[in-house]
Amino acid sequence: MTYCVGLLLKAGMVLLSDTRTNAGLDNIATYRKLFTFEVPGERAIAIMTAGNLSVTQTTIARLEEEMSDDPDVDHSRSILKAPTMLRVAELVGETLSQVRGEIAGRMAGAEAIASASMIVAGQRRGGGMRMFLVYQEGNFIEATEDTPFLQIGEHKYGKPILDRVVTPDLGLAEARKAVLLSMDSTLRSNLSVGMPLDMAIIAADDLRISERARIEAGDARFAAMSEAWSQALRDAFRRIEI
Amino acid sequence: MTYCVGLLLKAGMVLLSDTRTNAGLDNIATYRKLFTFEVPGERAIAIMTAGNLSVTQTTIARLEEEMSDDPDVDHSRSILKAPTMLRVAELVGETLSQVRGEIAGRMAGAEAIASASMIVAGQRRGGGMRMFLVYQEGNFIEATEDTPFLQIGEHKYGKPILDRVVTPDLGLAEARKAVLLSMDSTLRSNLSVGMPLDMAIIAADDLRISERARIEAGDARFAAMSEAWSQALRDAFRRIEI
Image 1 (cartoon, chains in turn blue, brown):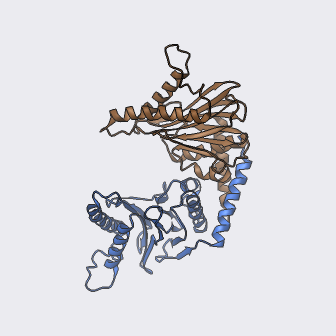
Image 2 (cartoon, chains in turn red, yellow):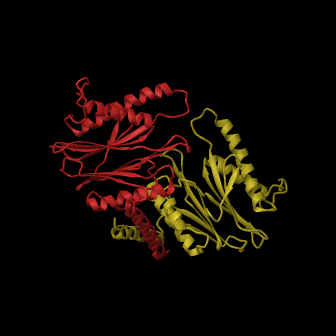
Image 3 (cartoon, helix red, strand yellow):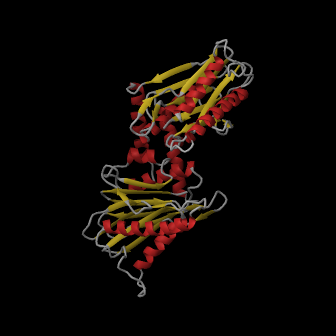
């Protein structure tokens, strides 16, 4: 399974994904699900993926090929050249829908399901920050002030904390904490979501990937935060009266 | 949808269910999903239901008929006369499986799905407290010291808090708080789980329904607890360092 969460705040965009991929319970591997692309000073884009790995990898590979400087490739659909973030979301959606259709067609009758979804976040010079959840049919929804976060994959365990603390005014340090705690609840409850974690931050108007981090399984700070949060929840639980 | 949760603790068993039933999003009603049966001093049993309402209502109706004093009915399968709680779980499972099979057969080809599950908890004189999750095929699993709670329906939103605070040593007052907070997280995130709530407590060796309560939508204490918990979570969130 997978858990990816993205926050769209006034201060910037914060994205966090796990890296666990499994084909059944007995075939578990680590794959990156967070991809970043930038032309510093001009645009920064982050994409997170959930679902069938052959679909998401092929989609990302095609998008990367169109961004490459390979002279044999048609770059007219490069997301680094798209005029707006809306167009970026459309290009990702069209590619995802096409790849998914090809693979689903070949898998017809097989038990496995070629489903996938993506979160696309970014900003280009002259435009605002935008964050989209792109479905496998290529259509998408967008994060707004009312709903300033998007999730894909195993989203339920980590949603209660987001519902309570995430508002568009949250600062980036608080936002980092919010997504890590949301992931922590998910890791505890669903073994098919697993460390290491990948995080990316695109600060408002920074027009570059402001921060990238991988948090490894033994990370002492993450473990301390997780333990402190559990302790705080248990303390709060003891104090609540009914 | 539905959310039902039951805790099996040394001090007793605590059960909580919502009451919302929906056929689509535009047809919402309130139905009891928590049923209690007792022969005070001899045995106490509570059953919670999730899934297709025609399946769960018919199952409960047949179980009630077998418990009735109607002379025209065969009482040999009454769960109030079963020698052990294990046999009670088997009887509920057999009835559920049969009803479900009959209805699923008639619904073959229709879009709706006749799935259902139940939590069966109780104690008889001379036996220990037992709590079972009964599947629609009639098989079941049992709560244990390692996993002292069972959930049916929309279980994910309310699981993180249970994972953190529920141990077999939890007292009944704390247990009541734990299931209410677990329900609170679920109510916030899934509109198809709704008030009022039904709660039942069977204290250890009490051999009766020790407490029954209905918590209505406007309940001031529940609202205060919910607000205090949100505030405590936000405070804890602010204090956590990463």
